[in-house]
Length: 235
Image (cartoon, rainbow, N blue to C red; front, side, top):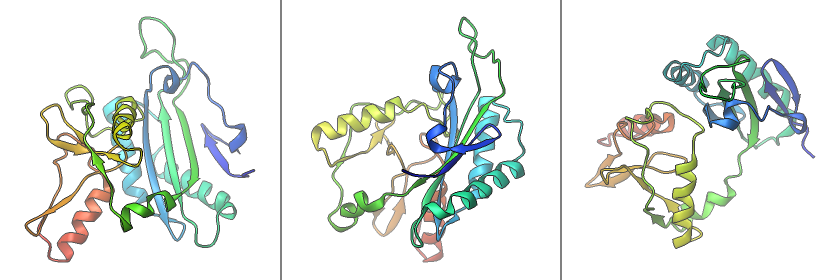
């Protein structure tokens, strides 16, 4: 059994003891913004940028975390240090932030809250072994019937946990091939993204990717374009 710790709204507790209310807006409404930061050599990659984007999501969703960016970073680094002994010398992890609006008052006005926002931070092993065949053999990409929620309905700049349409798209892709990954289109038929990442392709020596009008401006997306430009590849 793991001895990893998690942070929930000011407390550091064992992962096995982590609980939130069934009346939390995360449960009732999927009303949660999120960030997932991976580590390299157990150092978080672009943590400040991830936290900056998290606070942009707060602004767009009008969630007030009552914690500064610096405090959020300090708490996150402290949790990484606490959990360091749970990972091997060459093992990396995810550092995940989920923040909901807090406990909701059931009824006609879902914006009414009875608590402060619920801040959940935890680490999780990176199980990349399942992705290895995609590097050696390639990946079967399937376009599912489910489309992206348009930005007019849910701003693409918000990284959120309202992920039912991603899940449906992935289920539909796996009905075609259990090993497939979904390539989700927007409502106009343009390539948007995958359930867990941005999409790139190389065409005529140029690296191309969908605009952020219909997908999340991923930090790995930015890093990929930075590296490509440094190598003289047109983007």
